[in-house]
Amino acid sequence: MNNNDKKYKSVKIPGQISFFEEKENQLKKFLQSVTSVSSEDEVFAEIEIDGGTNSNQAFSIPQAQVVNPVVDENRKIFNEMRQIARDIQIPFKFNSHFYDKQTRINNSKVFYKQAVFMKDYEDNYNGYVEFLNYFPYYQQMSYAQLRTYFTWRTDVRKGNVTNVSLSYAFVYIYELIHNIGVVDSQEGLDKLMFFWRAFKRFNSSIDKYVIKWIKDYHIYYDLPKPFKEFVCENNLQAYYAKVFMYETDMNDNFDLFCNISKYDIRKSVFFTDDTKGQLRDCFCTVIHKIRIIFNRAGIIFDDLIFYPTNKMSVWTPFKDALFYSAIKIPDKKVVFSDKEIYICSKNNWSFSSTLAMNSGRQLIGYIMKQTESELRKVTKFRHKLSADINAVDREFIKKLESVGLSLKNIIHEAVNEYYKEATKVVVSVDETSLHKIRLEADNTQEKLVVPDTEPMIYFESSTVEASPVISQTVFADASAAIEDDWTSLFNILGETEVNALKLILQGDTNLKHFADANGVMLEVLADSINEKAIDTIGDNILELDDYLTIYEEYITKIKEMV
Image (tube, rainbow, N blue to C red; front, side, top):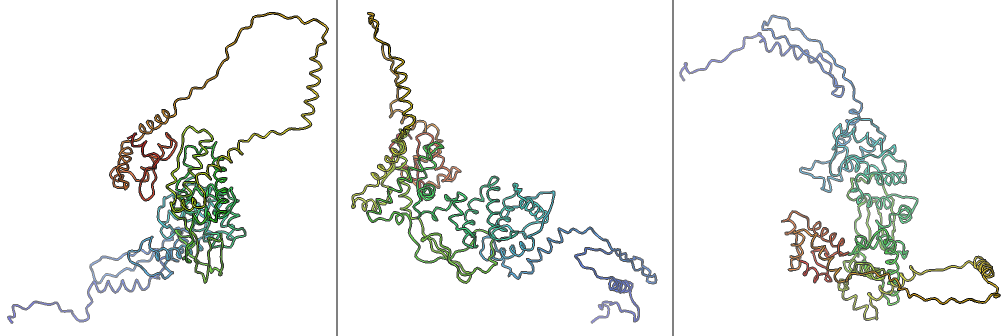
């Protein structure tokens, strides 16, 4: 190798310390002399390093300047609360979502532990920050959102319920179903009912969840009153149809059957504030008569509506809520009826229940619609209504005919019996008053009698025959009135709605593609058509089950209309 190709390398002079090494050593000594502080105290030290180039120059070591910040007690408490989530050993699951079952179980445990820690915390924050999240809990909230929530909760606990983001409301409900901030389960139920009634004025979307969780609350916790008694005291019978369905109390059945019926009479133009009491009583009379007649024929009416499940199924308390079962439930059995039983064994829940059959829903729908039809006739309502018996299971109709029964005739007789009884004029006579009236009449008669002492004088006069005044009400021809109703319906239907009816008449019952193409949900389209039909002809014309169909009795009219 040529010596000219060699590269020069620096060689360190023995015993000589470079400027940078000297500064580094001085800095290490300084850092060792500085007392370490915890990050929680949030203190800081300012360091000045002399930038002189003279290696002989003395290196001045700066003095640490400690800054004492204002301590935020709220933030300190929130940090302690968040630490609970870190302390709980939950395995990390990549790409986990709120709808993942294990993720919800983990989050519910974190929520419960944090809720217990924060159960007595109060705040008076002046700001407000929105919060929207699925299955919300504290760990998802920012500092400002936590202060917003706990300030609002402080007011709620004092009885002042105000409108907030729905997620805040659910967090508070989650606390109550865990019995957070209450003395016992009864107080928890009372507070849950109070909050539901107060907050539903702002957002009624909590109804469908709270209604389910109130029932779960009675199953999960031991309460002094039976569930049925609680429901009756709070007028909640309409929400818990299956619990009362097997009872014979006529006062309960109307709203309960409406919940499972294919035809909801409560949406009819005939159902008004003036007639709803009459419809309710009449329907209950019909059901009562059907039960009696069917029983005589060996037919159990309830078995036509429901069928029992064959095995016990797993039951999860407070499903669709962020709920952690923290307490050990003793083995027990909760019986709502002979058709609905819940069993807890070794802290695992199972239940046996019944399900409404589609044929049962059709049967109740026909009974309800035919009852309304008969009642419209006897009350001379301006619009007629017809119910299609073909909607009822054909085998069941044959069974009735084999024992000499007609469902249509039973309903007809029951409605007429009810109406006759309901409109019967009862005259009560007070014997004392009647005697007094007789005495007064006799006294008046005596005063009117004139002694026959003067000759009777007769005057001959011409009599003028007066033409009687006849009060006549002119009724329009009934068929013309009906035609006018269908014309009115056609005039208020939109182009999309008319085209939908045309497609159904052509046999295209799956109109989802048509609805999507017109930018409207199929359910909304069907409801819009039915609402306009009720306003004009007094009845629904479409049924939406698995697909859209026109009621058979209106097919001809709709063909003529469109």
